[in-house]
Length: 234
Ligand SMILES: Nc1ncnc2c1ncn2[C@@H]1O[C@H](COP(=O)(O)OP(=O)(O)OP(=O)(O)O)[C@@H](O)[C@H]1O
Ligand SMILES: [Mg+2]
Image (cartoon, rainbow, N blue to C red; front, side, top):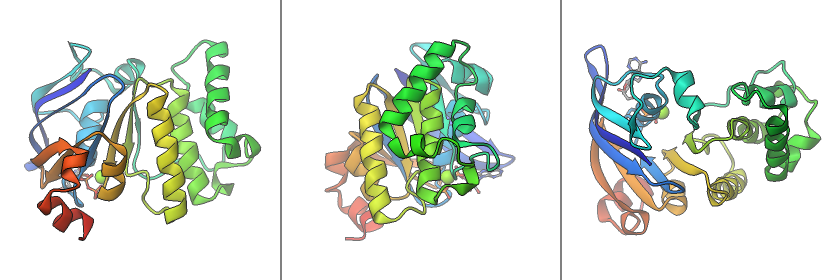
């Protein structure tokens, strides 16, 4: 469904991602793992069109999408939930959520999406009229994800959603991401928390300093000695 073919991302002379190829099937769930600066966010930004690739190609449903504007890529259903929460602090939760549906003209579909979000995150219905800044960290993370759902994504990309959450909230978040995938949304999950990524996804890619060093089924990666040593601390 989505395929990266030997993409190159550079910032000036710094190479952030080198000849990376990866793919995800419709309804699939992949994870991209790696330490600080490995090139994980750069990869997502390349897919969403926020950064231009300097080599290679990105195809979606057999059509080249690199070169399109971020808004055009989002309109195709590829939605990125950025690193950090980035809610509008002075807007209400409801207003924040509706921002996620800015490409949607059909009021009925917007309301359907809102209903979907409230089923997934009941707490956001209670907090509908609260300001973004009045939510707890965990609630803000849920709202940031909910805003992504409002765009009715086909592919949803998460950039370290578990960052800064307590183990309990991280577990709740994991359940929600699973639910979203079961609902038919293709998921790309970027995580420094390798345990979480490997637990949730079916297939994983490991980046080190911009290079793809390892890939495989997550059930195999979990048992890999290098992965265990470098990322699982066992
Ligand atoms: N806007 C930018 N300008 C210049 N260099 C950048 C920029 N964004 C990222 N880089 C560099 O590109 C490399 C990859 O960064 P990237 O943000 O993709 O890593 P990451 O895997 O997401 O790391 P983290 O886990 O810390 O978020 C790093 O060396 C980083 O310093
Ligand atoms: Mg990052």
